[in-house]
Image (spheres, rainbow, N blue to C red):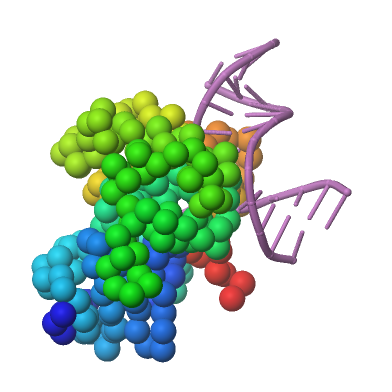
Length: 274
DNA sequence: AGCCAGGTTGCGG
DNA sequence: CCGCAACATGGC
């Protein structure tokens, strides 16, 4: 375990970890505790520095927090109107993070018709029951084999509800190489999405989440109930537009960084009253 | 009690 | 292509 001081610019650890994209980070005092690449990490922000205690290299940490993204360029492209400019100012420094595709996929299958605290609980349950203990009481996320080998009943004990069969199916396809997640990283957005949509339990929204949060497809624009609400209220006021069309509209309107616009709008819609 | 939650599927128009 | 109900779980 080593301590690293990593310089950052246009970065907000709090916004990044509170905006709803990740499920396994916890804040204790000024420090965020999380699990990245199956190892525990503690991170704290001091102005333009990130202080990280971790077994990971600074390069791994920089990659996870997408420090390679040019945020000024992102803001120039998605700051198309008054609302977006305000939202950008409010959550300045919020970055997407580069999650592990497998964990991300299972996490967002868990998110289907569900609430965030419950999603967090499911992921904890899966980890505690099937994952490796990496410190005392801290469990890594189980690999595809672990879940593929699990029984229906064992999985049900993790409170996954009707998502059990989907998760089993996803795990088996990843295990058998029928779905090769890392291969999708080198494909274009549409082709990669077609591959994900072949899997039972993965629809438009989950596919977009996996592509955006773990496979570097920044044009992916996941449309959920919150995004639908904010987009219809602020942009497409003539209602009655399908989720698919909202996504297509967003890619046209916001451009190649539509996914960043999505995350800012999502966070805005969920916290604007606070 | 009834509705809703970071949706998806399978059905009938 | 569209709209619709069902799906397990839990909080309000």
